[in-house]
Image (cartoon, rainbow, N blue to C red; front, side):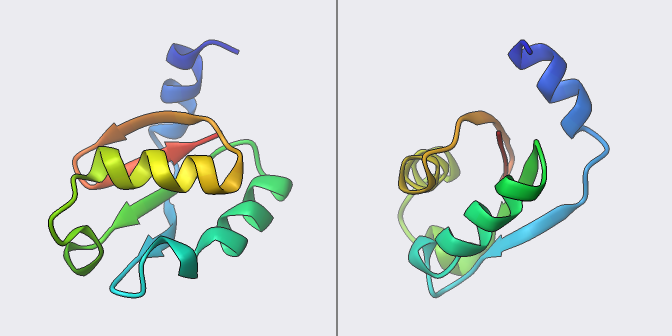
Length: 81
């Protein structure tokens, strides 16, 4: 599937993973489990998680930690495949 098709599918998804002050490490297992069950997972990066980093940087790190593809980031939300 192309990125454009994945982005279209992700549009109506609800956020199911929230990254907070505990950081990326706290949600790696949860995201991996959800990706086993679903094709796409939407995650939101709360202000406490971002600190001095951008959402793009954190989303890239999380995708690498899980072994997932980052479909897109928009605002403080990222979609993983």
